[in-house]
Length: 386
Image (cartoon, rainbow, N blue to C red; front, side, top):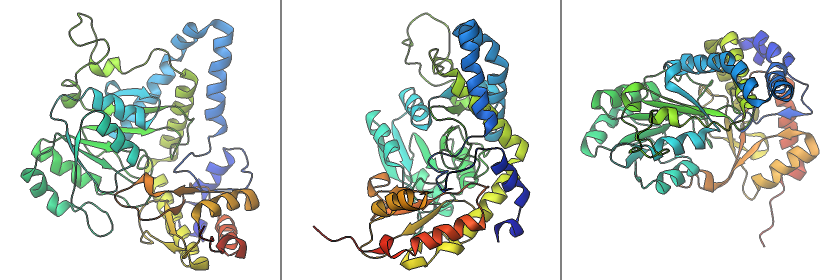
């Protein structure tokens, strides 16, 4: 029973702060449900723009946006001056790689997110794999020797992958990289809120819409001063005699401030709830989900039960198509999940999987409903080969 395990009040408060779900939401790794307060903050700014004009409203929003930067700084171990808002995780990585000052070589996990690999290729980075165990977890014991033997310009680690709920040892990786003076860039798109991301990375980036439960279309990039001062500004060109650092140039003037304000409120809610309490509750949610669903109708859970994340990955029974199952779960049962296709992590996934990612407000009844749906014969009929 989830609420008998840990932090049941936290889950109930989280649910009460949001509109009732029309079904069961198990898709926080894609897009969480915003609170009433986050939605109202964005709406209020839009109304203010209509009343006084966009630029006057933008000036009035500065203190709230500064509070958002301060919240990001607290959650990443940076300072507010190290933080810029972006449109999301991909935008943040694109900005960082485009301004990279050193050798364009990167070491990352074999399960690296494919869109990240595409950005690395677009920016001319040569990619090689870091050592991992059979589960795809970084082998910290071998990391120092690996990096000494073939030093990359940077190490890039997804704290939690998009297709698998394994928590990477990001604090240990950060210590090794710091000792070798190799920048560690932490993709916290899935790790933010699920894991402690204040680990001493050279750069951290994430999105608003996932576990932070903010609006879509906004995220952040936080860069430590030791790296930031070496970044090469792209726009305006670095040889132009104008002020501003590379980090400052990342701040886009024509932006959706309403979304940034909603994100800032969502971050405040994370801090108010307590990051440690949220992590504990999410770990309990993950364990409960895996326990409830492993083996149901032949579906098999990938992650260890006690993995400290709330992502559960299900491998389908032979012949069952996760894409069709996801569609049926939504259409027939009101249950929202994600399918991770092979293209999401092409060097690790061997077939599509079903990803379930409930937030802290999931209930035992929700999980029972999912188990019953997966047991429905129509969802487990093998797809005929064409």
